[in-house]
Amino acid sequence: MNIEKFQISTPESDLVDLKDRLSRTRWPKEVSNSGWRQGTDLSYLKELAAYWEKQFDWRLQEAKLNRFSHFRAQVKGLKLHFIHEKGKGPRPIPLALIHGWPSSFAEMLKVIPLLADPGSHGGDPSDSFDVIVPSLPGYGYSDAPCQSGMSIWRAADLIHQLMQNVLGYSKFVASGGDWGAYAASYLGYNHADQIPAIHLSFVPGGISPAIPSKDVPLSRAESDLLLHRQKWTQHEGGYEHLQSTKPQTIAYALNDSPVGLAGWILEKMYSWSDCKGNIEAVFSKDEILTNISIYWFTRTIDSSIRLYYETQEDPWTLPPGKRIESPTGIAVFPKELSVPPREWAERIYNVQQWTEMPHGGHFAAAEQPDLLVKDIRSFFHQFRKQAFDV
Image 1: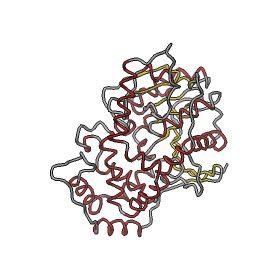
Image 2: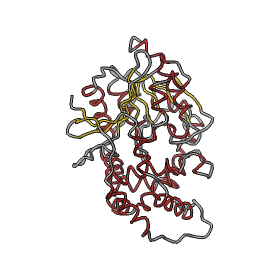
Image 3: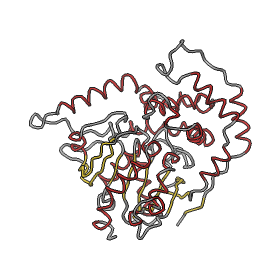
Image 4: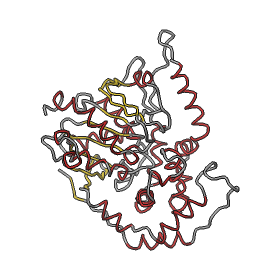
């Protein structure tokens, strides 16, 4: 097998360059008292940038990241980075845990030990998983494609190849949010014989059922969902439209300015999390900057946002009258980008577990790791005997 151990090792020159760029930031003005209404708050970004330059210890964070078992493997011409933590319980089952944007594999760090070694965290050791956290192609320490065509659907196929052909798992389960939910959905639809169940912390807005006939009209809650999504696209979806149409243009600024990159990512972490107006109620400065620094040091903001363009160019829709029949568990976090009613999700998925969470937003694994892990364990427990003979 073409698997190599991997450790994150950032050149010292990159750290020096980062601090130099931060020290020379040319700050824009803002409208008085605008806060976060027009985008990232200037005063908080200045505070974060000062911390990044003078106090943030990347070497410490790098060491913490390297405590996990990192690997890279050749998959159809690209080297994919992934964490592979073997389960500590009896006969763990393999779980592909897939991140999205503007996250990275780092979003999953809190849940990996809880899933791989539940016995040491107050859980049942028999509910352990072999946890595989791949970095999407063009994200973090995975290779960026040199040619066009890397949609989320092709990325899902690469993850399937990684799990089966490289790691040798004839069957596995998958879970994810954001792009990870798209990938898990696609895997569940196309590889149901090898992927007995999927779990989502996000119901993708880009995977919709066929327009219902008059015999199966939309419920009031479904109509409200579509109206909410329309308003969300108008008021919050500018980033998506830009990244889906002209990703290269914004990439010049984001790849050249660390503060520009931080402002672009930070606004989403603030807006999409259940932070109630205080981002550090959910994420510490170190957590925020670890994620942003991965993008900065790997120079992958351009390839990460290009996934939006490539996916729009390569649409995948469910055939009329079809849904994803793989048994599906869905954890519904109240501050998600949109919160669909169950009847909408059931038009798309074979929903067998539906959990409405008391707290949490788009970054479930980082915001509410205990709630997410409990839901993942609960859902996949039934498939250990059904599909894995455990």
